[in-house]
Amino acid sequence: MFRVKLVVGLVIGALGLSGAVPATAAPATTIGYPAGSVAVRYVGLAFDTCTAPTVAQLTAWKSSPYKAIGIYIGGVNRSCAQPQLTASWVSAVTKMGWRLIPIYLGLQAPCTNRTTAQKISPTAPGTQGTSAATDAFNKARALGLLAGSAIYGDMEHYDPNNTSCKLTVLYFLSAWTKELHRRGFLAGVYAHQDSGALHLAQYYNSTTFARPDALWIARWDKSSSLVNWPTVPNTYWTVGQRAKQYNGDHTETYGGVTLNIDNDRFDAPVGAVGFAYRTTTTLSARSGPTTAYPVVATYPSGATVQVSCQTYGTKVGTTTVWNKLTNGSYVTDYYVNTPSNTTYSAPIPGCSLPFQTTTAGLSRRSGPSTSYAVLGSLNAGALAWVTCQAPGSKVGTTSVWDRLTDGSYVTDYYVATASNTTYTAPLRRC
Image (cartoon, rainbow, N blue to C red; front, side, top):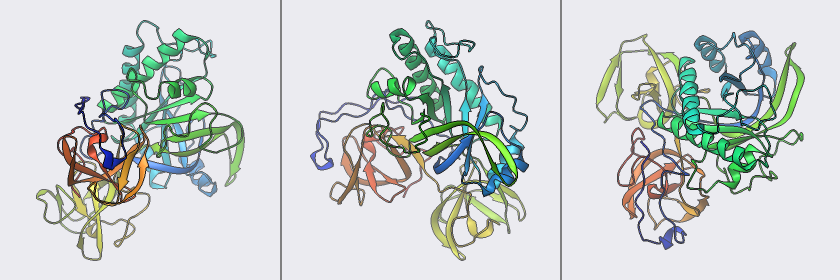
């Protein structure tokens, strides 16, 4: 499913690029998002704890500064029981406003500091990385997590000076990333700053290994800063792609409930879910967020629909908001009992899907053409959080431009979408 963009002997001076070439299969691999996919970028404080708290505990912790929680969804080295981790628990706590950070504690480095852990085989790291991603995907879907969610593979500290061990880890994590991308999920990695994070940064631009979409480092220095990490340059994982576990294994109390937690700060993708709401009249679902799109389904009044995200379209009643459903169709928000009938309704996220950029110095412009003003640029490997695609001036082999969540545009030629000539489903047209 990974595409290889054709190399074109072309320097796009107007884009501020010098000798840039489109993506190959690595390090930026495309993501096969199915219909209904949505990605959620969480910015703020989070915590993780070995066993997922109960609904009652998380209700009490709504008074805390944390709005996201790390949950261990699986893996052969997961050590704590998870009686709470069910689809109904996920539905209940996300409806309360909690964002979820899926963690998968799979096989560890052959030279791991955890001597009792089950380890990656140096002779089969790719196969095992693919198997881990497959299992993580199945675990996530069983909990109701949607395609577009990020899953963080937990790679605990290991000997950073063991070269063969390092390469085994990198092959494992590359296969992890590729398989999650193939299945429509974002690939994150949790790693110690002095081993896994160090090595992923060293091979950030390598064409041998697929680059994960987000990096979550462990460094218990009590600083929650997402920049100036000692082993990871600030130019790597720059756009909603960083998290830090900055304090470990201590207790905190909110609402009379005490939990043993680690502290985290995130600006990175997390889990995505559908939110159940009822229709207030007989309602047409369309293939896009305007009344001009064809009707693909009809829901009776009082039917429950699963909303994955919200976007803008033609005005109906008092609102221009449209709901994207988990099946990929759209309904006007005016006839759905979300909290607002004029604007977006928390905790439903805005609709966007991220893809890695494939070159350095990719210009963000005020419109879909090289004639528009440059507003800034994206580094290689940065996530382009795409809301929709529009026609524009031709760059390389494509006239498609991607509109980002900040309203700027980048040429699709240097973004790892599924095509370098035409539009990419399920992204909608602007």
